[in-house]
Image (cartoon, rainbow, N blue to C red; front, side, top):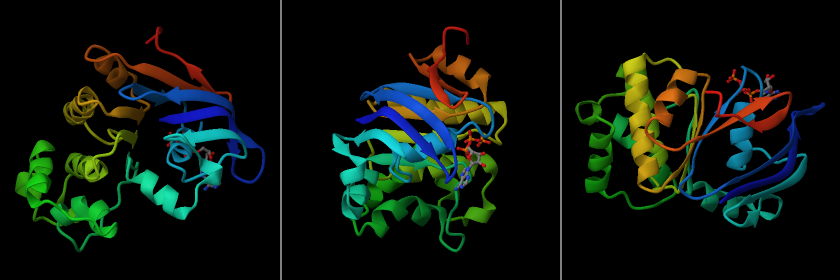
Length: 223
Ligand SMILES: Nc1ncnc2c1ncn2[C@@H]1O[C@H](COP(=O)(O)OP(=O)(O)OP(=O)(O)O)[C@@H](O)[C@H]1O
């Protein structure tokens, strides 16, 4: 569903990442790790066509990203849910409306029953009418996850979803992502947190990718 062949990318000057080859198959679970500034967010941006490679091939659901027009990219993004590192919300809209936003901006119908179910699933029923600034860090991350899965995407890309959370809240978020994977979704989590990876590996079979020296490596056995 997401395929990279010999991909390189950079921001203007030299390549930040190079020679990256990877196939994300349906239902797989990957962690993406590596030092701060290594390029994890950049890698995820390639996976949802926010950035184009300087060289190499990226296929999203069988389409070459270079040949995709704006509409193709918009359609493809409905199939990929992204939980951004700094999850931004529209602060004047209640949490429930923020979560529904990916559908409303796409002009799609919002099934209120499904929205409520999703809000309960992430444990935010009591906060659904609150405004985003009233949420705690953990609640924001769960709202961001709910928003990312609002379009029923096949792939979830989560960038440091547990970044500022305590261990208990990190585990809660991880269990939601594991649950999504068990439902058949493909999941990629960028994280520094090796304990989180170890914990996940007791529950599911996950591959660990590491960015080091501008390259993507398969880690795992040593974790
Ligand atoms: N839009 C941009 N323009 C120029 N340089 C950028 C841009 N975005 C990121 N960079 C640089 O690219 C490098 C990789 O950034 P990226 O955010 O992908 O790393 P990361 O591994 O996700 O880091 P962290 O773990 O700290 O979030 C950094 O040196 C960053 O400063």
